[in-house]
Length: 305
Length: 280
Image (tube, rainbow over all chains, first blue to last red; front, side, top):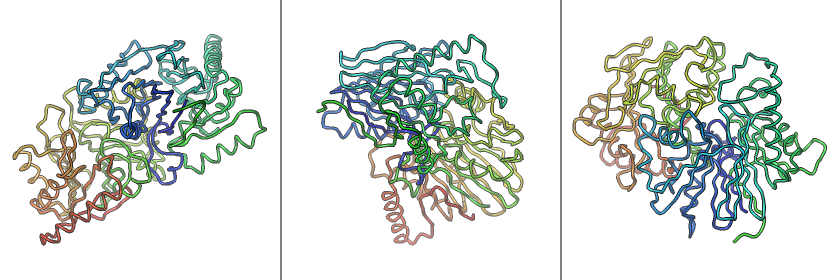
């Protein structure tokens, strides 16, 4: 399994000199297992990824695009992904099923007038939309297994596990911790102090946390929302993001080998992300390896051609 | 009047070392009048940084006021709106002008862009600042001492794209984006609208030599010809293509400046750069 990280930023892309090292593109991760190409999220990192695929001698004709949720920072790269305009390609798009709007309609509306000048019909690739839930298991050509859980994020989001015979990656770019606030379809109003959860809400949060930990069980890598400092989390718990400490807590509970801090805050400079990572490294050591994901990062495990 | 470029990239933001000089944020141009008037044209991701820069001023205390002029509602012209803190601070006032679309009013388009499927804001109702939306028309209006006029400049099946002209005394900035001069009528309208502009800000993502599929953009050569024929003093090319590196933009500016010199033209030419401030 080869993993390449094309976008690490959360909320919106940032184009500043002091953020170049971790990168300013929004979330996009490429996973290759043999000839199988899986892409996680369609943030602005998807545009340079599409260009890189175009430079390959034998680029994949089938691309499995897994979308955690359709907030702008996770789909903004989609119309700038060159392979969607190639009639020889097949794009299998996976995302949450919702009662309010189909995945296809959500993408189609974003692309078309008055928000964009194109329509799904303009895309030359064969586009197939798959609406999925948390708790599903999918199989790609018997070589890649995909499973899902629900993340704790406004309007809900998916968490993915991508597993081959060689390795397992877990991708949870957007989630709050599993206490204080239970996110669902309704907006959470924040008055500056937490509203005590009902017994039922606490049980739902505990169940969500258990399922996320099960999803991440002994994964080789876990890419996880670490947008906030502790101080930011205290002020903005209703945005549905975590801190490095909260990410670490889940990683340790799941027995993950390598945690990658991700969905960097658009205000955090390289130096600030360095400091957030260093604070984790300063804690008493466990077997968990912790890095901060950066644009251009590559991870490998197992035999690769 | 001061002009500040906060986002000059077209289509999609381009973080990266090769774009740092001209900048990777999408369209956002600010104009500041002599009496503190603040007019912003388009709210691409450049608006996020602009908003951060304003928080130290009255906008941080909920006492700020700005007028937003929206050319059209493609992603690269609107997606930055909800992110700056000032938008969520009660007391700040945003007066938003722009065209209604074929699929609903400007307000409906913004509300849809902020709906929960696309945004954690959950709709315009949850924007903390006081905000109003008004459909733009060709009737000029004043923002303090700034005179604003507007004109639709497209004849496509899609929603209209508007050009803006902001004047203070005898000085003027004209902003034209996402326009393709497919017929003489549009060309004549643009020529009239840009007449003797102090600064013409014009989208020009490609040159005439490039074979690209585009969705209705003018070329560098069109923008130069328009500026010359309209008698503009200075042309600022913007809405740079996402593949356009700093080195390419340097080369383009040099090439076309040399041509202007050869022609004996007095037109000042440059590529708009994020962070640049010009005294109009």
